[in-house]
Length: 227
Ligand code: ADE
Image 1: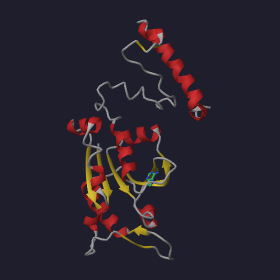
Image 2: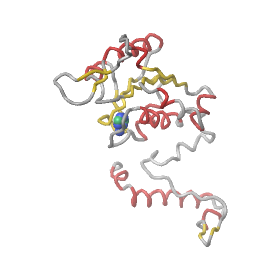
Image 3: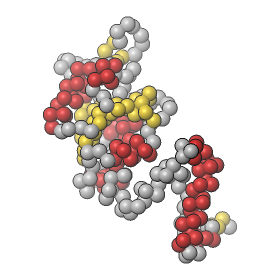
Image 4: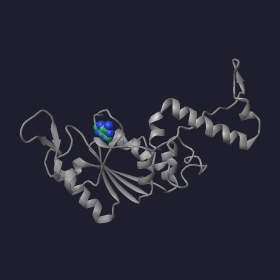
């Protein structure tokens, strides 16, 4: 998979993909990420990418020209499955959205700033808008990092154990069961006996039950989605 990220602060996105699982994904050639500094697409001497809003009002708006120029240049090289704008008023990111995006080949992510982008960008250049939660960040970069991480770990071959992403929380609209490691007892706090019993079918049953109990207690809204 290839992801192009358009941003005015590329520095913010240099580190998140250079470590751990995202680094493994790029080392294995399963995910390539290219950062594009929007300022390089400004024709303005000051590398300006934002301007005052028509009709007045506080806050600057990102101009359509540099964005269109950048997206058009990218489209000369690749066909894109989605051109995504990270925005607090987009579709809420969840595991289903991450799964869908992990099946695509080429994506463009546009990170917003200031008051957002000129509405014509959203109308004519963007195919999908995604929010990572009901709160406002100062820019779309951290949201883009979250989105790429959620997608990247789903690509076949990225995680060591192929099944582990399938067993993540939310894959079946259920929270993952509790996990434990050594020691079996710490300060009198014991690991549930079933997990040290060696009885694989019973352990699987226990885990499924715990998943359900946890989801019911912590995220009953997820169970409602099943109904
Ligand atoms: N940009 C600002 N806030 C955001 C959010 N919650 N999700 C995605 N992009 C954003």
